[in-house]
Length: 446
Image (cartoon, rainbow, N blue to C red):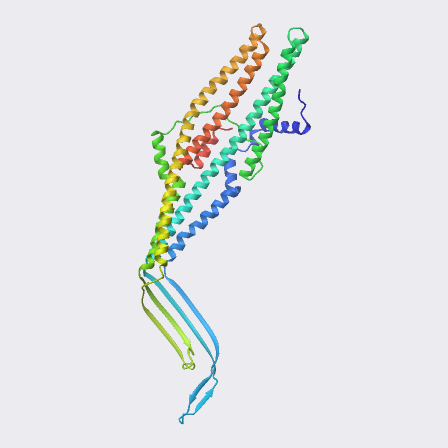
């Protein structure tokens, strides 16, 4: 029999504590998701990107609102002034004086295609950033549930491997007693011992996988995770919504956050075209100003003046060296690219939607088949044990039945986790995944 090192024994003890620990100390799926919302670095980045994107709406709106500008200047001047007297002779003087200007100007766009395009573009960009944030939130749900179920499956592997090791160990003792009594064979001992050695190695590998899975989950939730809720005894199959795949497809095309964001990107690109094209159109502004000058020029350095003006300013572009036309063509090309990006994204989403829909449907049949396989495997174990006592079966038959039962239980656990993940991924592809789905999934665990 393979001898475990002290480090391995400590790992096995940790696995046993995980599997036997009280539920009060376990982290539920809902708690894991809430911790990830607080601590996950990728989600914090998504929140910052959303907050930054929300300002695009305000920046775009500002182009339509009044712009108020104030100016103040104060200067010390020393001039050379030449004046002629009544006889025509030059008289040079060097006056020194302080001059200053204070002004306030208000400018309100009355007609500006550029300002309107910036306003609409800002709205599209903010909406796009909100959709991208929704996409990142759904990705967080999938990462949390994915790493949580990975850790659970790893712990299930440890449990099954431990049970298989213990069963083989007990079988080895039975073979030894039967050999001593002359009722068993050396071949039976060697067969069981070989299986036991493999089971010991498998158990150590399962423990290493569990340690890695728990570390990965801890990284996602931002807290150390030692115990988890396990799958409950009942595993209900949720009915699929009516409408079949076409119903899910309709949802995906209208609500998938990736597609929604790309649609807003197309609108932003369209407004960029309008913004660049506005360089060919006049701009009309309402302008009001108030200014006060003190010694504004050399001729008036002993005077103060105040002026008030209200009027309309029209700016008509005439020629800019072809820059406006080039920028418009460039923006049009980017709009075409944005449309192509959307078409490619639609294809990817529908392929993934079909994949997850098929996985969710097939997982139900797989779970039902494996539940029958586990039940049959347990009956086969019992029948084989009785047959060995009657001399009908041999030790190898029992070992094979044990291995088959272990494989069926492992596959059943994996099929159940895959079923839950497929449903969540299906909802994510359709754009309907929310925190309520996390709560619903958490009910499968206890």
